[in-house]
Length: 96
Image (cartoon, rainbow, N blue to C red; front, side, top):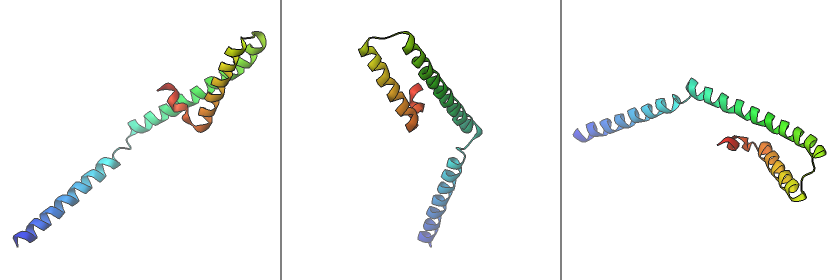
């Protein structure tokens, strides 16, 4: 009888622990988390706009000012890499 009582107690404690963990993990979707995600998304859109503005400005500036070939190649490679990062969705790492 004592073994049966210990078995029931152990199963009950396991069930209570599982319920506690489930409630804890379900509580992670608080408004603060969604606000932070919205802020991150807004920052991403702002970065994409700045990159687009930079691309447009660099096209105009390249017509007016001619850079040394090595510097122009470096800037073009950096721009291509930023474009690839935005296309892959890695723009979030730009401001970390």
